Amino acid sequence: MTYIHNTITKLKKTSPAQAEFYQAVEEVLESLQPILETNEQYQLNSIIERIVEPERQLMFRVPWVDDQGKVQVNKGYRIEFNSALGPYKGGLRFHPSVNASIIKFLGFEQIFKNALTGLPIGGGKGGANFDPKGKSDGEIMRFCQSFINELYRHIGPTTDVPAGDIGVGAREIGYMFGQYKRLTGQFDGVLTGKSLLWGGSLARKEATGYGCVYFAQYMLEDKGDTLTGKRCLVSGAGNVAIYTIEKLYQLGAIPVSCSDSSGTIYHESGINLDTLKELKEVRQVRLNEYLDAHPDAKFIAKADYPADSNAVWHLTGAQLAFPCATQNELNEADAKALVANGCIGVSEGANMPSTQEAIEVFLAANIHYGPGKAANAGGVATSQLEMAQNASMQRWSFEEVDEKLKVIMKNIYLNASETAAEFGEPNNLVLGANIAGFRKVADAMIEQGVV
Ligand code: NAP
Image 1 (cartoon, rainbow, N blue to C red):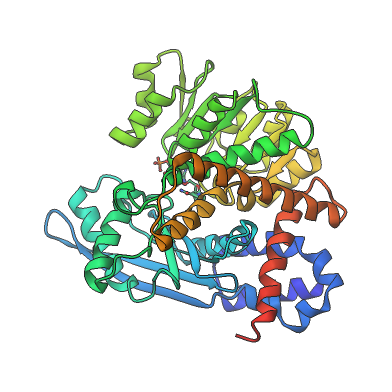
Image 2 (cartoon, helix red, strand yellow):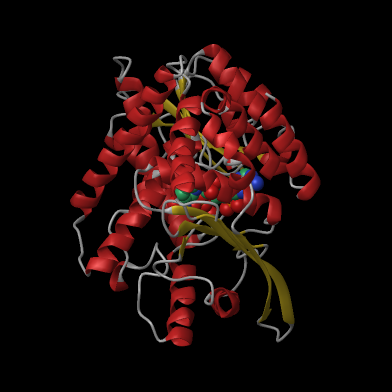
């Protein structure tokens, strides 16, 4: 359709060299074709031209002093993408690969994900090209303080509420909150993912992984199947992967793999969750140390595997796949291997882990495919539940939050699948999630006028 094509062409000219951002935009816009064709209002109001342009983009210097007394400098970002449905909401990523393209793709995805939750939150994302690995606590604290010295002017409980993402957990949120409080004198719900001691929500840490498994459960149940006894491939060994594995066990499935940037663990009898937590949450070491406790497991070093493919997706004997590490970690060849080896479903814990070609393989094979913006929305949804608890000065129990999470994930699944059916492709949750999220944001934008 020329309207979509022209918008993408123009975007590439005005925002050059942002490959991940174009990838996310193309994936969303192409699936909007059926709704754009039948609704002139969207073209008349230039909705897609507006929706691909962030409302505000902040880029700033983050200077800090390392333990040797040397001044280091990183680049900080916050992209306030769309506030049609509520305050900007989305995580902060600290990773050396962070650049404007990556933060924009994440922020763009966040708009539709947040809309799908049904909660009053807009979309944003931020971060820095800072690598927390190998840094002392003091270095992490000084970096976080410097990052907030700029960002504090732009965030607030009713304007923009950042959370964690890769490289940002409760420790980093703590240091950023402390500095925000010092600069503003305010103790408010400006960040989510906080410690349980001072305003965090029970079940927030678990929410993205748990939600991703609930989503898989609802996809299977809708076709009369269950998670019980299913062998599952999981990638990643961070927050999302760990709590995906935990919930898979709770629902009777058997997760047999996990991975980090050094390689993949395959444990035929099932990943030992206690060992994984000890290695990654407590000691923060590389995954090959898993073998010290479980010599019957296998470690496939990244260096020994072809660079253009991910060992996790070539393991055999599993029925389900949960990509929970990072963007573009599952390509066309990986997707073909999964399907050939009998995989019947994929639920994405990470953001945009599958390339466009891989998604096409899943859709053509007609397997269950839960795209990240639907399947991993449990994290941001529970962040919003944290905001609600902060604003009302309440504290809900773990069970209460988990129950709300289940209902939200069920509604996201139903919203995506019913919208897919409405547009004539009942099993296409990519189309369903994109249209359902877009329609809500677009209609709100029209109602709020040209702003
Ligand atoms: P995390 O705790 O930092 O863990 C990330 C995991 O992925 C680590 O095991 C890391 O290994 C691995 N990884 C990262 N980059 C990699 C690469 N290039 N190659 C191989 N492995 C890589 O982060 P997380 O919070 O679990 O986030 C994982 C994904 O979920 C991200 O896509 C994030 O955007 C998405 N997500 C997170 C949340 C949330 O609530 N946390 C919500 C929605 C979506 P190393 O430690 O070796 O780098």
